[in-house]
Image 1 (cartoon, rainbow, N blue to C red):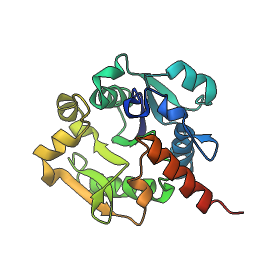
Image 2: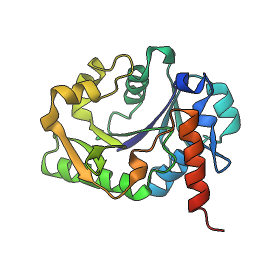
Image 3: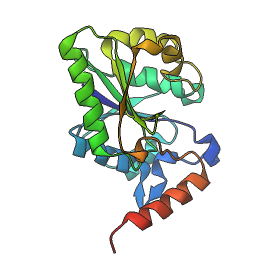
Length: 207
């Protein structure tokens, strides 16, 4: 099972700033996500880069990661997801997909989604079940996409839609896993989001 981090966006709602490099607790957002994945057992995720990739690579040590470059991130999130899925090893059963702007995601949530996905695949190796965490009924990340669906999902990935369009057409293939983790929903889209996240980080940091 691969882990894919989408970090190629143009940061439009951030005025074009390189969002993966924005800091929470003086740590870049992307570094938070990479560290959480490492703690969860995924030390070599696929990082999809695009906008600001040279700056990202110069400021964050991603030597343990696999880099996939979206050649045209202006096409939107869908193009980054296609790039990430194309980079997954052929023998991987699927991919855990997460965004680079989710600094409060819990390693326990990542492990729980991965285990639920493996359980589904143990029962039916060709299972078409997408697994996602849900906090208080709202779907979050990471989302597990089984390899059996890669081609079909890529056909629906356009603009700023990742797997959402596919799941809207096939709701019966989505399994939600209830978790006690608001971090699976919390992403940083605006400066206000970043400021709120910084306050949350200060409140949760000992001392």
